[in-house]
Picture (cartoon, rainbow, N blue to C red):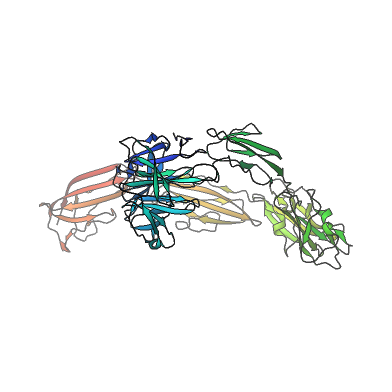
Amino acid sequence: MKLILTVIFLGIWNWSGAQDYYISSGGKILTIDPTTCTETVVCNNIPVNTGGGTTSGNIGDIAFHPNGNLYGLMSNYFISIDLTNCTSTTISQHTTNSNALVADASGNIYAAHDSLYSVDPVTGVFTALGELPCTSGGDLAFHGGNLYMTCMNGDLLEVNISNPIASVILGNLGTGNWYGLWTAHTDCNNSVLLAANQNDIYELDLSTVGTTFQCALGTWTWVEGATMAGDFLASDCGCPLDLGPDTTFCAGSITLDATGTNYTYQWSTGAMSPTINVNSAGTYYVDITEPVSGCTNTDTIVVTQGTSANAGMDYVINICGTVGAFNLLDSIPGNPDAGGIWNGPSALSGADQGTFDPSANAFGTYDYVVAGSGGCAVDTASVTVSNNVSPFAGDDVVVNLCSEDLTLNLYASITNNPDAGGTWSGPSALSNAYLGTFDPSSSAPGTYYYIVGSTSCGLDSTLVSVIVNMSPVLWVSNDTIIDSGGTAYLDASGADTYVWTPNSSLTCSNCASPDATPSETTVYTVTGTSNGCSASKTITVTIKYGTEIFIPTAFSPNGDGLNDTYGVISTAFKSANFQVFDRWGKLVFETNDLSQKWLGLIKGEPAMGGTYHYVLTGVLQTNEIVKMSGNVSLIR
């Protein structure tokens, strides 16, 4: 927790205001009272992330930034320090060996060693500004608008930021390690420059570079860097407060901000936070109190809520025939606000009324623009003024439908680009407005009229004759079962023409009663057509395969036409492999097509008479796996 000290230098200089004096000593961060040299440890140890882990060590110097952040230097690391939990964030690693650090009221950060550097607080990049006449002893401090630095040899240097090598050595502070250097306020308008030599605190006289001893810190505390948290307040004798000028918001809410340093807040709304959100007009004030000094302040702000603009809704005006001048504002729906302006192809008379004269103004789109009050955005409505031509309903048409067809939009059937937006009349009420959706299953056939236009522009109509033809009612023969290699007799009736698919195993594909000889179970579809309407049905022809397997035990390939070949005789197989071996086990015949037979030849020559061995392996039409073997006699 940050300690705020209000101190008085007894007998030397009066203290005014509330300041926080921080020093770095070894790896610790402390607050001190420079009048009594009492110190309070804020953080015992600040770990630093070095990329390969964390380390801790002496923090060479520290500096408060106007943004409230505390920055520090440890070895070659530039860090941001969080005093609430005593942690740090490594911003960058540098090679400048800088051990002095300060920030000015504008937020510029400077570091020093043999040269002066500017430091980017976001990226941690050190930019060399120039070489210094001496090596920094450990601290930089702004005082009276000038920058000062303690040198390693005890010299006090007035730093020339724009040309560091031209910096002026004012004198020598004496022996010892002059590490800490910072400004302290003595009253509302004056301040002094303090320096620390090891653990002793001195006031500096810049005119003589003389030192006046104030007090000594504990023997264990060496000041290695010093800074003041209040360096950048405009005044330490009051409580600065400014809610800003009176303001206006349009919609939602607006934030009122009284944020300051260490204040307590009491808003007219009862809130006690630095900021509040208000969503209504009114006069708001806030009372602030600085708890240590006891100073108070009050500020008031008037909040006005603007009015949203309403230009109405877009609209289209169709002018038919010769009409006189009229006001476009009267045509806009949605109760538009008065007082707007008109933009468009022609300049309209009548101010916000937007008087349009068809004989003088151009047809087209005119924008009515209304500005909201109090910063509310403008609103715009568009009025399109069209000079209509005579309505056109399209050409008469005849629509033929089938009783089984899906719905049809009759508007889409009208030729020659009819105007949209018309109405329908006829034997049945049609759905979907001007599209005129006709449903063959429920709408009555007959003559339908499509009508477009208006009383002022005239009417036009077209005739749509809807004819609903009955789809044929097909009759087909029943599903059937035939033996493999057999013939099924298909039959259909009820239509004028027929088409059968698939047609590869049919005697004809466009007759009423074809014969079918499929090699496998097949579903045949017949489509019958009458009066331009079609219907389809199917017949399934199922193949029944035999179950017998016959393998002869002898054959005589002598060319007499009797038992000249040898093989398996069966239609029971879906797939099979048949092999014949001689008495020595040598394969002499093999086939995967049981219609192929062995001719009693081996390599084209007649095989010797005798006993041969066969092996049959296959899958039946019933998906059963079969394996058979046996002997066969070849007789010569």
